[in-house]
Image (cartoon, rainbow, N blue to C red; front, side, top):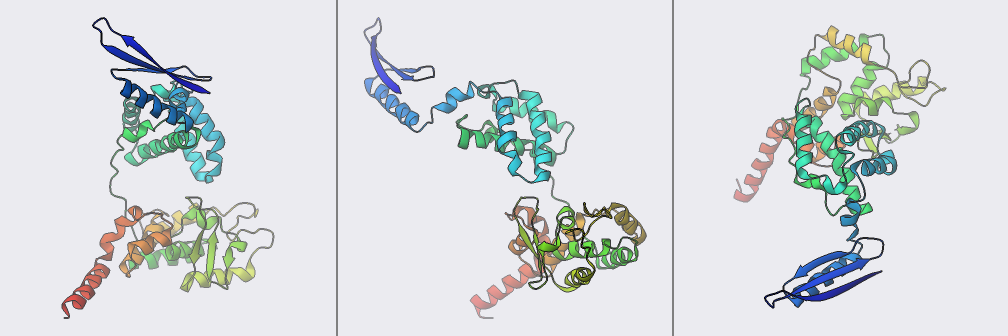
Length: 349
């Protein structure tokens, strides 16, 4: 229950002041003073409306809970719903924030103190890593605002993110690609070659490929359904050409004691391809190249063969175009063709 009262208090000079007090069951009273009765009534009306919509609680709840309370509840209720890799990263990030500011009440966690922590992170970590720490805490704040009503707004909204350098684009030249594939095929690890072919053909991440199971493979429709992706959403990988051939060759000789397409000897876990991958790179004479760069290679090949940024984003599983802007310069020929066709149409060339 709540009740608003307005008191007329006269000053020594005869001027009136109107003091509004709103009593809310279970919370300290809210008070404010105004020079006119109209202003007092307007404030009382606004605050009462906020109370009815339960928007008054952020002010009081922020003074009751610490940042440690927020982080603990977020880790308990929200984090388990995210992908395993995200849980690992955000658990580490949130533990750092809890150590730095956990004892503070939410009402005391200001943009200024958050900015100081950002600068402290920046002393030893790259901008992208710092932004990862900020993003983890930002979502916790957003949840506290939207769902728990512990805050009226996130203090991180007023904290500037470090500018990240332009993303790395390292892709295999035609000669490098052929040398690498030959080295993978000649190696002792029977799964390395098909895994690399799939990475180049589909742009899938290493962990996405290693977790594929045979129930995820649909040879009739020529696709693989990824159940475990970085953003937690399922994604279909179209199979074509050599990638489809490799899966078709593996299917008749698949192991029956495990659902994994690329299992270790015990069949309980995916194969560890790192030693074979490092040997293949060395034998192919390729330097400054990571497995993840196969994903960049696939995106680059798509761009150079005329795929739009939206199409590349869909293939890679990105929700926005920002992550694929780095490949825009590789689409210049395609873009020039689009502009040429438009000019031919409007000027009737």
